[in-house]
Image 1: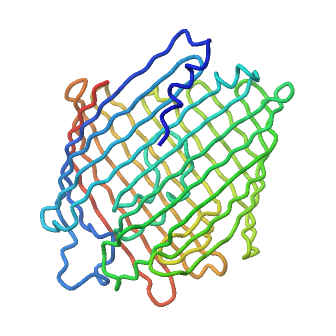
Image 2: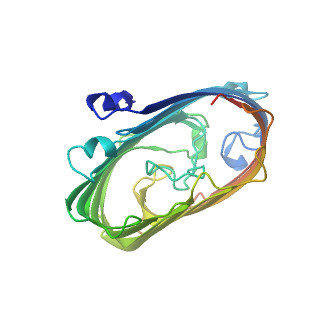
Image 3: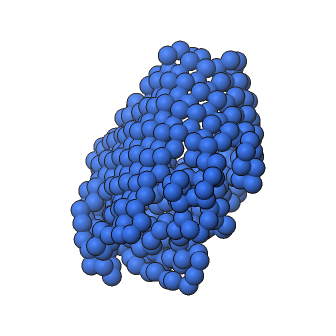
Length: 402
């Protein structure tokens, strides 16, 4: 992980004001999980206990830095999880997220230039299937599009660079590059479940003109290409394919909300499969009493579980948090993903996820949270279709020192 960008404004004589915050966090939680293996009961050994109580102790820290030249965030954490009955499943997991907006720094060399550098890392045996939270993603993670693997130790990392260079009166050149990798260590269910995973690398770049219609309206056209390479974790099977996409993107940034609409077409090779792609994203300002994030998207994405290769991925998410008072808030989310393999659509992944929770602030630094989550994941394939259902009830106590 990189951290030097936080101090990059030391190179600039413009630095007159800087604000740096360090926010430690500690979480103690207890949850009841009806399916700790993330697998259907018919594929597990006879008598295997699937439900369990899990105790978690987590700690983390977030570093926020803002000055005239740099806005940066670096957060990381780790948690220890202990099971009441399946003690062999006890595990540690880690996450790290970082980004730096360097608009002020690059603006010294070209007025109006923009630069964003970001990275996201996670290690966990309980792989998430959707992106959570009311804020928009800083990094587009190709592995959070509804595919839910069985329990396995997984490593995932995405690093991205996005920039815009002004040319003439609102006209600019916009480009990006990202590298995403997904690795599987040990698979924590028996091989009889058919738990096949694919280590995956994704190189993606884009370039195209952009035009700032007004201070709040931005339009861009881009050509994007992605190269995906995969290797099965239990053998030597190799898969390689690429996608090419042409799209138009319109963004409006208001004081209290931001909306982005995208439309285009995508070609997957060597399958020679073309299809329309689109996306809609709406987020509200964090200062509002109700926070909303709506994401709808249709795009190409890699399949890394059961089968490898490309999928046509359709994902919809709605996340809402409402503050009834300074101390009390409600939240809920609904996520749906539908992925079809290319070519032939022989394997289909369908995932529905819903969550509801309440949060009460005991003090300025301590909060109590109660939540319920439901997940239903279906795999349709010749010979071995299955369905995985999971319910999770969790009570947690969080301390955050801002």
